[in-house]
Structures are given as structure tokens and as C-alpha cells.
Amino acid sequence: MLKKIFKKLLYVYWIILLLLVSFELSPKAISYKKDNPWINESKRPWIIPHGGAKALYPENTILAFQETAHYDVFEVDLTLTKDDILISHHDLDIRHDLLLQDLSDDLLIRNLTYQEIIDQIQLADYPYARSFVDPDGLMPYAGTTDQSVLDLLLPQTLESLFDTYPNKMFILELKDLTNESEDTFSIAANELLSLISAYDMADHVMVSSFDDAVITYFRSISEGKIHTSAASNETLKVVLMSAFSLDFFYQPKDAALAMPVGERLSEGQINLIRMLPKRIQTRIMRQENEVYYTELIQKTLIDDLSRHNMASIYWTVNDIEQMKQLIALDVDGIITDRPDLLEQVLLELGL
Image 1 (cartoon, rainbow, N blue to C red):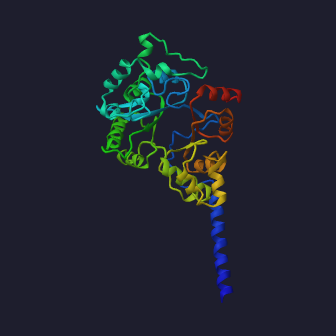
Image 2 (image 1 turned 180 degrees about the vertical axis):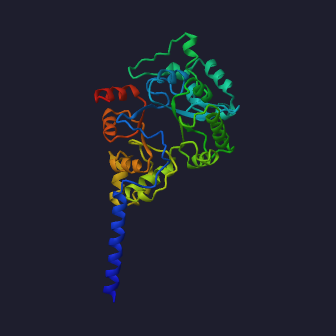
Image 3 (image 1 turned 120 degrees about the vertical axis):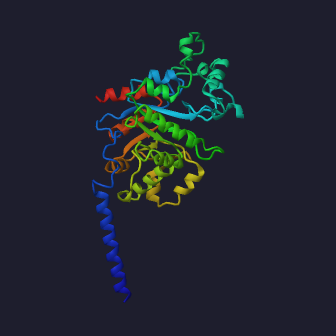
């Protein structure tokens, strides 16, 4: 009796295994929208300067976007001001701009109008821009007195970016999150949707956030008509389903997966990954000198995204060998602080 039950269970096991293998080998799967402008049909991945190429120019400034406008895609961090203006800025406060350590309410971007932010930076004489050091070790703006240059060393409004670069592709990252006392994220999301509609930029933008709730909310108010990039938890879900060869069953809601290259993992993340089978651990995590990093440059993952009609984008890639590795794997885009290096690599490869 037990022998018959065992044979039946073994038979079922092999059927399930064969089905899973056939699903994994299938070139097709549940697809994102057929018309996905973030799929790069060429062998040359898009050059995407990180925050306006933060190694080359003061990040998220008018100057940075002006100097990198010839590259393929803008990647812009967005925060919401007191007067509900979305500006290019990485942090939710202006300590970085003023080179301050201590945080106070009067430094929070949400507590300041756009003009007040400009006034504070100018009154302090552009501390961040003045101290900026380029790859050659120079400080090109330390002694600048030309006001036309200084006027460019400031955050830019998203509306101004849309108006100045109407044909540009944009990755727009909402920095306002859901864990704030005020629902700033919802105001920011609605303002973003309003600007996208007003400037007819729906086919030119992809909205991103580390916060899954922000992306879910934006997808809801935009009725799924604006392309989004998967947030943190959704990205982890896709990566794990791919690692377990179960991605066939994934139902994509986002146009792309933006994945970190060599990002250092926290203790909590490491402990979570260690709960997975060893073969899965080695597919998503690597160790160097007792430090753990993400290991997501994988052909299988990129191929899995491709059959779901999702774009593969990697950040932040500043190493030439990693650039070459990603180019060889035919990724859609590379976010980098050094677009000049990536452009040089592509030229050397004849792309």
C-alpha cells in the first residue's frame, strides 16, 4: 500500500517538475504592455546619468542636466516643496546643499518654498557647488564669480525640465515616502501626474520609488497609463521568482526592473537571504572580506525580464568592467555617475 502511494507521489512530483521546466524554457510568459518604450531594441544600452552625472557635476542642478542633455535618458530625483513644486533634489532637506550636519525643521524641503530654498543656497554662497570635486580632483566652481554660471548651480523644477527638454526620456524618482506625518507622497504623486498630463509626457517618463506603496498609489491614480519601475519589495519578488525558476507565473505591472550593482546589504537583508536554499543565496548575494553585496548581474534574470516585456536597468555602475559585462548581457539601460566612461566603452566596442 505504502509502495503504491509512494509511486503515485513520485509520479506527481515528476509531472510538476516537467511542467516547471517547460514553463522555465518557454520564450513567452505573461507580458507587460506590448508597447513598452523602455525596451531598448538596439545592442547599445541607454546611457543614463545618475542625478545628472553626480561625479561630473553638482547633482540634480540645472547645470548637471544642461551638460548631460546629449545622453539618452535623464534620471531625476524629485522632492516636494511647501508651495507644492516638484524640484530636482535627492534629499528631503537641504543640509547637503548648505554642508550642514544637524537637521532642523527649517531645513526640510516640505517646509520651504522653492524660492526660499534658492534664497538660502544663494545667501550661503552655494556651499555644495563650491566644494564640488570633479574626477580630476579639481574644484571648478570654487572661485566662480560669473552669475550666469552660479544661477545654474541650483535645483531645477520638474516643470522647467519638461519645458526645456520636451523630447527627452525621463526616469523620475519620487523621494517623498509614505512614512511621513503628512501624506506628502500623495500630493507629490498627484502633482507629478498633473505635470505629465499637462506636458503630454506619458510616453517619455517612467516613475520610480523605493517605496512600494508610493508606486502602487501612483499606478492607481494614473490608472496604469504611466509607466513605472518596480519598487524595492516588488524587485525582490521578481528576483526571487527568477532565482527559483518560477517567474513564468509572475504578472508584471511595471515597465522595468532597476537593479543595484554591488549594493552593500544590511544585516537584516543578509539574515533573510540566509534563510533561502544555498543555491539561491549564491544567485543574489556575494561576499567580499566579510561584507555582503547584491549579485544581480545575471543572464537568466535579464532573459526572464525580457520574456515578460520588462526592461532591465542597472544602477549605479561606475566600473568599466561591470559596464562591459552588462553591455554583453544586452541590458536596456545603465545608470551611472560617469556617463563619459560608459560612452567611451561603447565607442570602443563599436556601439
